Image 1: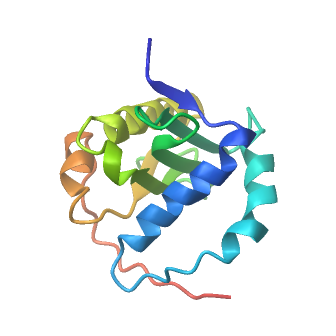
Image 2: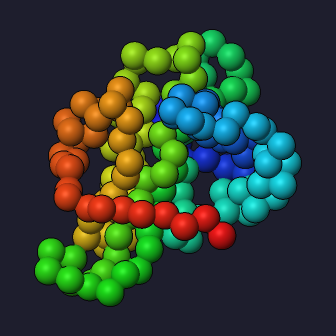
Amino acid sequence: MSLVRRAVPEDAPEVLRLRQVMIDSMPGSDGSTGWHEESLPGLRERLGEADGDFAAFVVDHPERPGALGALVVGTVDYRIGKAGNPRGLAGYVFSVATDPEARRRGYARACMEELLVWFRERGAGQVMLTASAEAEPLYASLGFAHKPDPTMILRL
């Protein structure tokens, strides 16, 4: 029996807590949490959609009932096809976090493996993510590689 399960709407507050753990670990991050309350209803709705383009996989915290120990979240997007991904379905991993008290137990890897199965089941031809230096060995061991992509962002 796997420790990993699909997150459900009741997990939403803990999903946000672990997402904040991830955000807080990034250089130059905004540690404010005021956005959590506004984000919660939409997250609960998305966690309740079993067949949508959004999924979160979690491991329950081993020592704290009701808390999550690890989290991965991803989406599947359509982009015009290209060589190597002719159907144009792309997975994107945007939150991977482990509670500081539950680290070094393989939980993030187990959650990532489940998310990759979910991406394959939906026909994603590629999966993208942004890796911290600390997490890069995990992603490399799962087959992720750097690509020469000059990504830019505009905040609206």
